[in-house]
Length: 463
Image (cartoon, rainbow, N blue to C red; front, top):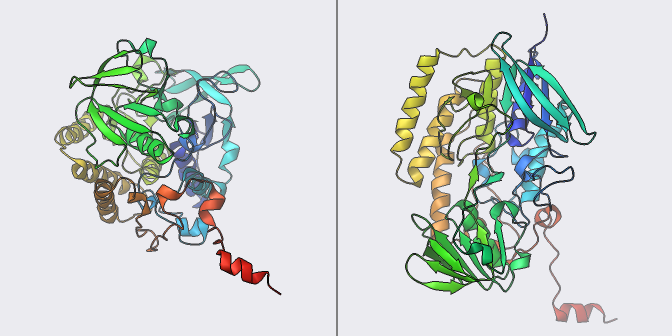
């Protein structure tokens, strides 16, 4: 009998979770299908794989990543910890609750490097088009080997779309912005706050990216930061030099006009206006069409495309939980592909989707959102053998995190939390976040030696 084949698009956290799920089954002696993962970047990690490039990459493909220098986790690491691979195991000592990007990237790689999953990934390879044959029940993928400039096709029994949804920007238009004399960019192309030192910045949007980029630019020396919101403000107690204003109506040269009738001049504009779910490699009848929300329509258990459950989407939700949620989805998807989890009828799946959509519509605040996504993970984690973790405790941490941000947007990253996997209390970072300008792994993990004061230095030279 011919072995089943699984194609995975993307080797970011979701794609790597799917590879890891199959490896976990293999270690238990289970027979797994042939798995091939296609990654258009030259390395794994998805959004966590930082690139200085914007626009297009080495081979002319649109840049996938929206990662930037000096990004630190904006939520406690204890809320995203892998159940089967703790931070303690990886770093062999307690670390703080809010690590910078290079440290989290190192953690992601640590688990996956324990297995040989890199052998299953074809890097510098992008999916161009996918079709599904109703007679053979197989997907045909047309692929481009970018490095060798070669186009070819392969067949698969299952397709896992793990390409993420934070790479295709929503770029709105405001009358007169084409005449703005300064820099205008989307958060997707933001690579660090250095270039905006001593500048007056206007950020349009009220998302996490607006909040984080705004605070980073304030930290690294921007003269002022204004955040312009469409419907409601973020509502933080902003430090001096940061403020919120209603939406821009139009621009006149470097002057922005706001809905409240006020005007102000700026040196640069950053659009923090979100991203599109974009799958240009899929035909219309297989394409997930949704806005960013906690429960996209048409996905049973948030994973299986209801019209064709051989098509699997991972990580397509708006996210409080991240790495551990991708794991629970990948473990469930794996068990379906192994024949261990049987799907109900299409009609029953539709009813289940509708129940979640109805509940999603009634959510009112951040606490409701956290409880909703906690219950979602609770619903799917019981369907596979993914190691359980204390969801109630993680939900409490999320709610405390939101309160910490409201208390002080500049100091919440100095707080510490306790791991639900190992019980370890996080260490305090050696430097307050507002004073820490170096986000390297080396600086983070190894406390710099304290400078001796002048008297000690002088005495040490006396013979």
